[in-house]
Image 1: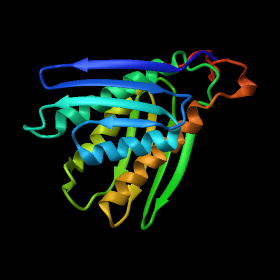
Image 2: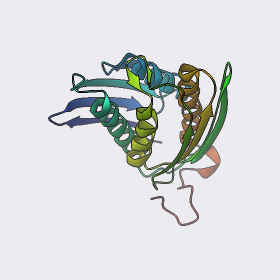
Image 3: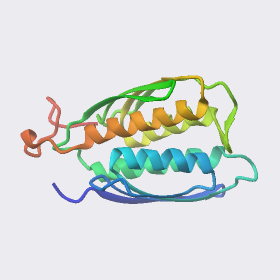
Length: 197
């Protein structure tokens, strides 16, 4: 299997985002979005997926956090899709159940090339640090769209920090399983159609 790495960039009047990732990494993370809790979530994503991830983002945070959160997620998904290439030789499907104290997250996904997101994440407050809780689902939807994955993710609990972190850890563990090379496939595309997308 060839190197599964990608670098992607997005520059607009609202943001400048660069993402570098390596699907066959060790979970190293260097994240700088200007939004502390978003950095924390993306670091958890890298750590538990074993995807090496670098994110450098500057955005119009004087307006609010929306553009930065959205654009980082879009570029992250684009880099993920690019690194996967034709998706040959992977497990394709992944699932995980992750507890974090009183919170519990469940994730199932398909690296099918067909973007879809079904999210049920319950938050009690409007913000976690500087991150709007409503943007967490939006980020996950944006990632799923550009990554080309079908994503089902639910999380609930009493502490919003725990709920969000459990959700990203469940996503990470599911991605790790889905992108892992499957030796029995011998490099074949995991689809009866012969292609994904």
